[in-house]
Length: 325
Image 1 (cartoon, helix red, strand yellow):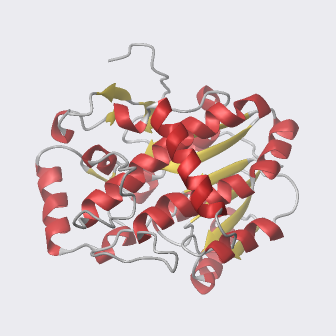
Image 2 (tube, rainbow, N blue to C red):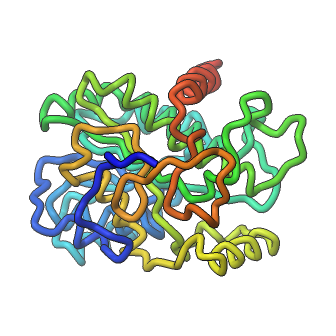
C-alpha cells in the first residue's frame, strides 16, 4: 500500500455542508448530473449554499424544477438552474453540450443507473455502461472546451466521477463490453461501469491536466437512495451480505455527498487528479484479486491502470463519435 496518499481533515462522518463550510464559490459554475434525487441533491445544495451557480442536469425536468425550488428556498441562492439530460440518449447529451454557453468550472458526473436485467440502448449498448460511463464520457468530452475556459479563469477546473465500492467486483471486459457473448449479470455490469468511472478520471487527467483540468473518482459509500429501486432480490441479498461483512455501513445522504464535495472543492485536489477517494481521503490501492470484504476502503489496481484507462478512452470515443448523435 502506498504511504504518500493525499489526506484531508474529513472522515466517513463528515457531511457535504461541513466540507463547504467557510468557502466562497461565487463565480464558480457547476453542473451536477442526476441532481433531482439522492446525493446529487445534497451536492448541488452544498455548492449553491456557498455561492456557486449550479445547473441540475436531470432526465425528469419536473423533478428537477421541484428540487431547484427547494434548494433556492433552503440556501437563498437564485443561481440554480435546470436542464434536461438523458445520459443514455446521445442526442440529449449533444443537445446539452450545444446549448451550454461560457465557462464551466466543475462537472460532477453523479447520475447513476442500476438495472435488474439486461437492457440496451438503440445502439445496442448495455444500459448501465451506456448511462454510467459512456453518457458521462460524451458529456465531459463535449464540455472540454468550457472546462478549459473555466480553468483559465479560476486557476483550474475539476471533474468528479461518482464510482462505487462495487467496482471491486469487475474490471472492464474489453472483449465484451456490452454482454454480447457472456451471460448477463447486472451486478457485474454495474461493477464494470463503476470501474470505467475511475478509469475515465485517470485518463482525463492525463490528457487535460496541462490545461488545468483534473478529474477524480469518488466512492460515496453505502447510501440508501433511489438507485436501489430496481434491485432484484439477489442484488438486495448481496447488498445486505456486504453490509453484514463490514464492507460498508450505511451513511446519511449528506454524509454520502461529502466525498464528492471533497474532490470538488478541497484544495488538496485542486491540481491533482486520477485518484479514487473514499471517506474524504485518497484510497489505497489493492491487488485485483483482493477480496472486497477485506479492503472496504481500497481501490482495485484495475480501476487506476493507465493502460486500461487509455484503452477505455479510445473505445469510448469510437463508440460515442461513431455515427454522431
